[in-house]
Length: 337
Image (cartoon, rainbow, N blue to C red):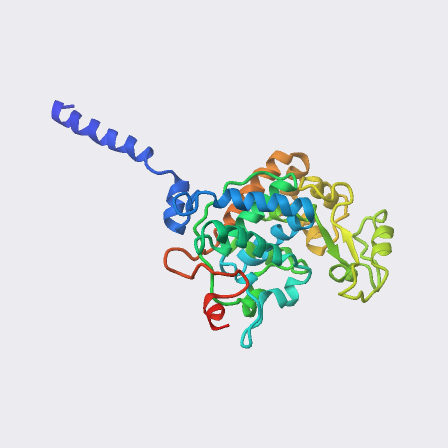
C-alpha cells in the first residue's frame, strides 16, 4: 500500500473508532424520546430525592401505596402516552380514565398530589406529574423488594383524558394471550418483557369481581384443586359487591414482595387471572415463565427493561403538553376554576 493511501486508511480507521465511542445507544434514545437521565439537575436538583423521600414516607404509613404506584405506570403509560392523563379528574365534557371500568380498584391518587405539593414548595412549576407518576413507580418497585431501575425524565403532562381509547390500548386480563402480546408489542415490548411485566402480579391483590368467572357457576378445571377452597372462601358470592372489600392475595407466600414466586405459582396452576394461566401454558410465553421461575436475576433484568420501555411510551417532551399546577386538573381548567 502506498504511504499516502496508508495514511488515508489510518484516518478512516480512526474515524471509525471514534464513532464507536460516540454517544451510546441509550443516549441516542434520549435524542429520540426527548428524555434524559436526571433531567431536572439544573432546574430542580432535589426533585428525584424529594420524590424518593415522599414515596418512602407514604409507604411507611400506607403499605398499599406501592401497589398503586406500580399500577399507575401500567394504566397511564400503556394508553397511547406516558402523559399522566390517568390522573385527570372528569369534567363536564370528558370522563376521567380513573372512572372507567378498566380502572376498577385504582386508588391513592391523592398521594400523588402530596408528592406534587412537596415538589412545588421546592421548585414551583418545574416537575411534571407524568415524571412524578413514573418515578413513584420506580421507587415503589424498590420499596417492594424489586430492582432499582434508572429511568429517564423530562416528560410533560397531557391536557386531556384518554378514556375513550382505554379499551383499545390497555391489555386486559381476560383477553387472549395473543391480544396481550400484540398490545404490548405495539409499545416495543417483546415476549420476555411481557412475561416479566405480568410478574407485577406477584404483589397486591385481585378483587373478586375480576376472578369469579373462574369459580362460578363452575370452577375452572385448570385451577389447582388445593387453591380452590381458599379462593371460594375469599369470594363466596357469584356476583360480588364491587364496593365490598372482597379480594384474594395474588401471592399468598410473599404478598408484599415483588419476586419470582409468581412464576412458580402459575406453573402450579395457582394464578388467579385467566392471563396468568395462559402465560404459564402458551408455547410462546411458557419458556420465559420457567426461566423466570428459576432465576430472580433474570426476572429482574427483563422486568427492568420492560418498565423502562413502558415508561418511555410516546412521551410528551419539549414544548408539547404542559407542567400541571395540580395533577388532577389541566392548567386551563385550573385557571378557569
